[in-house]
Image 1 (cartoon, rainbow, N blue to C red):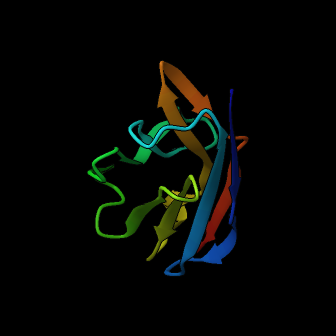
Image 2: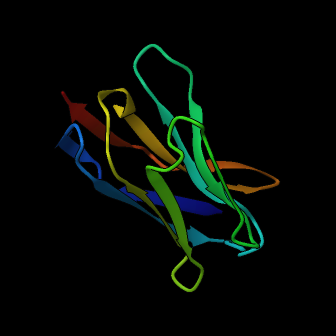
Length: 114
């Protein structure tokens, strides 16, 4: 089994920064992708950023240049550094791990005030 626990969400003013963390436990393999998705009220869950075993990264166009995903393979932890936050970044952010199927964390709320 796989467990994902996120932390680091909160309330921040526009232009500010937050760093989200996700600690994975259980049957975690470095070759499998991890990442972050988010879901705003009334909207579908959308990809924010993912990182593969080769440390190759993929970002949503809306966050490129502002967000950075980092993976610490020794700690089974993935981080999302979010800079220059905008009100439209407000959402619940979910950590994601994929191995034969997707595993999700419980989510952490990020609220950006204007």
